[in-house]
Each structure stands twice: as C-alpha cells, then as structure tokens.
Image (cartoon, rainbow, N blue to C red):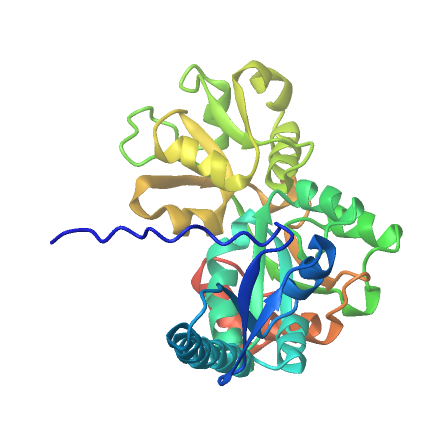
Length: 330
C-alpha cells in the first residue's frame, strides 16, 4: 500500500485577499473574499460553517456542498450524543439528595470492625453512605476542634467527648453511651516468658510493654491508671513502647516485637490466634471504659447522623458490638 501525498497548499485564513468557500448548513455554499483579518476572525469563531480553499469551477462547488452535508450530519451526531450523556446523569436534585445522606463518622480505632458491620446493614436499609475516619480518640477530638467536616463522633473515652461538649462542638441531646470494654494484658501467642498477671510486669520477664500513648489514646490513659494503682507505672517507664492507637499496640504484641501489651478485650477478638490474654485489670484500678457517641453540632446532615446513632443503639447494633467483644451499657 502506498501513501497518498496531499499536494494542496494549506489554507491561509489570515492573508488579506485570500479566497475560500464558506460551507453553511447542508446545501449552501458561497464564494467570499477576505478583506481584513479582523472581520474574518470574528466570523471563524462562530459555529455552523466550514472554510475550504476556493478553486473555480462547478465541480468544486458541488463537492463543497457534499462536504457541507457530511459535516452538518457529524455535528448533529455530536449534539445528540451530548444530550444523551446529559440525560444519563442523575438530576441535580438527586445528586444533592445523595450528598445529604452521606455522612462522615470519626470513631475510635477499637470500633473499626464492629462499626463497619453495622454500617453495611445501615447502608443497605437506608441507602445512605458512611465514610469512616478511625483513629485515636484524642487525635479525632483535635480534628473536630480544628473544624474537620465530621458528622458523628464515637469515642473510646468520656474525657474526649466531654471536652468537645464543653466547647459547644457536640449536640448534647444526641449523646449516648453505647458500649463498655475491659482492659486486658496480652502476650504473643507463642510467648514463653511466663507472664501470667499484671504483677509480673514489674519483673525481669518484661523488657518491653506496649501501651497506648496516654496523651491521646484512651486505652493508654486506662493503662496508666491501672499501673499506677498497682504501683508499677513509674517503674515501667523506660520499658514502655507508646502506640498511636490501640490497634498499633496490639500489632506490636501480635508480631512479637514486645513481651506484652495492654489493650481492650474487644481487640483480642480482632487479633484472633496471634495473641493470648493472660490477665484482666481489676475493675477498680481504672475509670469505667465507656464509649460515648454523639452528633457534631456543625454537621449539615443531622438527620442522617442521628439515624446512624439509632442504628448503633438498636438491638441489632448492640448484638454486633457484643459479637466483637464489647459489652452492653446497663
């Protein structure tokens, strides 16, 4: 196959005195002479016509008319496709409705598995969408204080929720305590250290102990309270490995990077067979581990946010929480 060379000179649309055809619509073709570049520039910007080099003779004019019909048909197809695409898009009112039903939930890391299961059933039932932001309760508190677009806050500790309520950032009438938890001591599944109680933490059996950072992580605050109650906090200071959230502390233990860790009982469920629980902290050694949830006052999706809290508080939601190691609030 040989390439066909096009020897026609390029169309010069800026040279005064140039002659060319204006193909308009499907059937009209007229000969025009460019007098000045400015008037031509204004014309060429308008849609609906095509410029072709002028060559005298009826054949060229007939061809131009055919080309005009073809180009107009192509333009009509493009316009039709554009309207079809617009019809396929959901109406603006529907998109706005979907946006109003999409909420962001900032929740403690220990709630990850339970809340994801609750959200699946909630989304199937309501058609709403939930975006989760899991992390340390203290860090999530700071985000809300900084104006993060959050609709619902679920904390692993009372102090974080109380701080936001005091600042007027929480709708107080929506607050509920929806779960309890237990503080436990865990070791790697294959550990041979002989650790069987909290008292053993003060012995040579423990070189490194993973706990949440008490400055931002509720489980770290509970651990500090329990170890202080047992007279071990100051002694263990140099051996502590501070985690950014409870799941990180759990991972340190599961990977055998520390000798033991203090986490929630619900997190042991998430770790499966990778860790072993060897002791439970005395109930009077720390504050009650309560999980509060509430709507953020600045939320623009109050109705959907309240509906998610209702789902968490429902019998179905409470059964899911129990499935993942949480306890009901009596």
